[in-house]
Amino acid sequence: MATAQSTALAVERREAAGSRAARRLRRTGNVPGIVYGGGEEPITFQVDARLLRQTLAHAGAVIELRIDGAGGTPVVVKELIRHPVSGEAVHIDMLRVRLDQAIGTTVVLDLIGAEDAPGIKEGGVLEQVTRELNIEALPGDIPDSIQHDVSGVVIGDTITLDAVTPPRGVTLTDDPETVVATVSAPRLQLEAEEEIEEETELVAEGETGEEVEEGEAAEGDAGGSEGESEGE
Image (cartoon, rainbow, N blue to C red; front, top):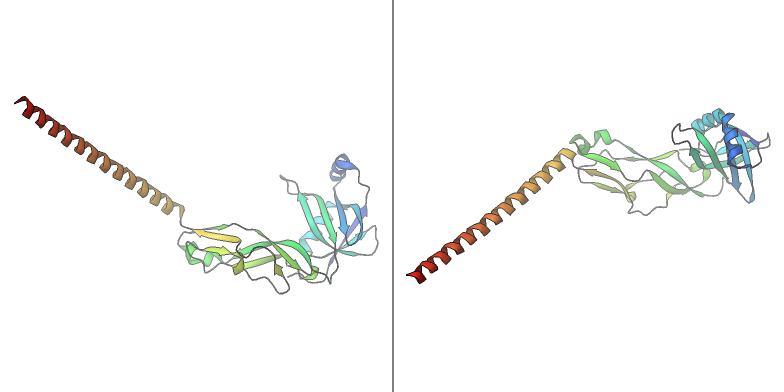
């Protein structure tokens, strides 16, 4: 879990000048960003891309933002936009926070222990439906992720949010009935069952057709007998 200790990030103030200026900024190895909230005016800034990457890799939830060498302001990352191909940061939004006031944010849900689960050992397929959780917590209590042990799941299980236990000081704000993950039967088994059902339907249809033909033949025989009787 993240602690109240923060990692400092030095940035430079910049004037908001549109997307063209932002692209030029990125070409020089910088990332545009903005910090807002806390009852103060938003401030746009630029930060060295390498420094940002290193800071995010080692920081907890709270970052001490220092603009133009001024005193640090506690912030959290509100949104980090990455390039869809390279994965590099292209813009960052930060939110000023007070360490004594809870805030709402999202964290990653990490399912652990799947390799030991009976259902997985039997060939079941674990599908994680929900990958991020909405939470409320003090900035210093926001965890990097929330883990949930699935080592006991079996085929056919459905895991809902009410089974997930958050760390101390963290409140889950999503619907407790939210589906987190499911464990389905092996694909080959499902395909085999579908084939069996199809074959059963074909056999049933074939038997019904034979019954109809037999019935029609019987009616034809009966009609022929009547005709012969009338002829006689």
